[in-house]
Length: 216
Image (cartoon, rainbow, N blue to C red):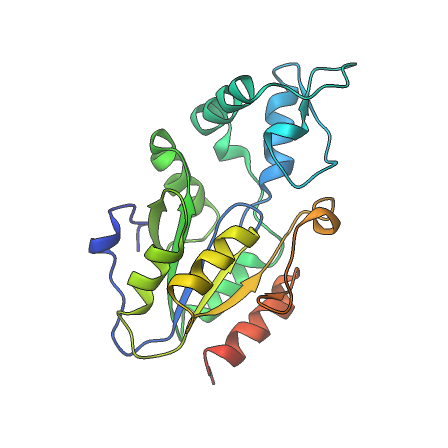
């Protein structure tokens, strides 16, 4: 199946199938590593000292991070020229391939509009041939829309605490997992284990997803 980046309304979810809704960056893709390599080719450096993106971009030798506007320009350029170079998260493709035999999978990602083609191409290249929905802003409403289409259990996976909280607000019946694939980011990531289970390794996460989706 080709990755579909048509809108949310046209995404197909079987009404009786378990549903896994999964993010891309730092869940399926090693985003910070790839973005760091991209900006290095443009004369900047990524210092992973906080759980943020633009505040970690520096000019070599400077102590003040790059301003937001310049950082946003690099981010936009990355989705034009560098997004194909991301490495997949270790174990992600195998885990989803196995889960997809028993559950529907929807990839729900926030990416710029001009990055649709590169995101879909990257997913196909690395074996993530599942429905792709490009989102903007909080993911709770979109996740709730998808999860209402099935009577079976649903799971949502993301690295960002605000997105997990958004799903908890709009779709409290959806099981939630936080995952951060970059080892440098893991100790910096805001987390709330009392609200969202945190599992950072795909073999362990896959087993936990299976239990929540009641998969044989």
